Length: 335
Image 1 (tube, rainbow, N blue to C red):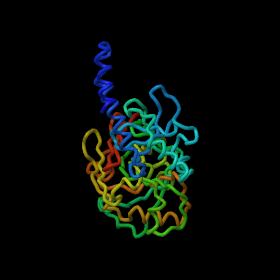
Image 2: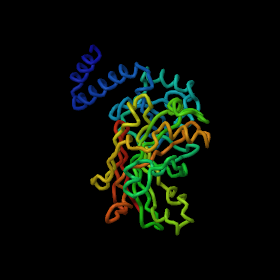
Image 3: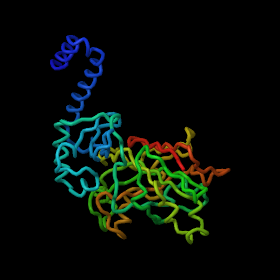
Image 4: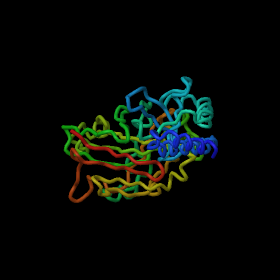
């Protein structure tokens, strides 16, 4: 309180700076609040982001307490912490302990409105996806609920940030949306039981599985989904990867996707055919999962393909994708 009073006196004495006094006070209060909150170093309060400064400086890694709080800079404070989440996760407990100490001190804090928020994870070893994993999505296309998960993949090069543009490929006339919960793996994971799967999950993020439906046709690429799912910019992610401890229950999260302000999808992860733990366990018996791997877990009903009449994305459309407690993507379709 004494520090704030001193700051008030300084502001009043220097009348030329009086206009900025309120902003300075608010900034100081926010910093003080963050230091108190971040003094509890539990990872349950961590929202990991990747970003650059407005002047397009080097990429940085930081942590927020909430969607609206300032960003505690981690990689900018010491070169011993990497500036990307994949390498951070590869460092395991060593990097996490360093991050906790940096967060507790909160020496370097930035306003999220003063930086460019990037995708929270880039260049993972792999992106894996689950098809037909919501009962409502199966029902809207009149297919049975799969007894076992169905997997396909997207290339890591498809990843873009939470507000980046999505390119409408000129060779597709059926661009569609699919909001999905994304799992981010925290530790090497191989042949784990479902009961142990949570130990290998680092956190969760919001994903948009952009899909070129005409390239899913048997007439295109032999019916393989590779191009349908992996064209450039087809995987918006973000805005943060939220540590699993901060996600109350990943099997009970609300999802909403709107196009130009009109709600197209509204669902809940409780509608999944195979929950996040079963997905991780099943995959781990076929493929070794590595730190930073991203798993898209399926989409609820409401995609454009199964509407009557069908609706597909066009240049200028704005897609908003939001999941409870994780944040929102806002991506514009461009040619």
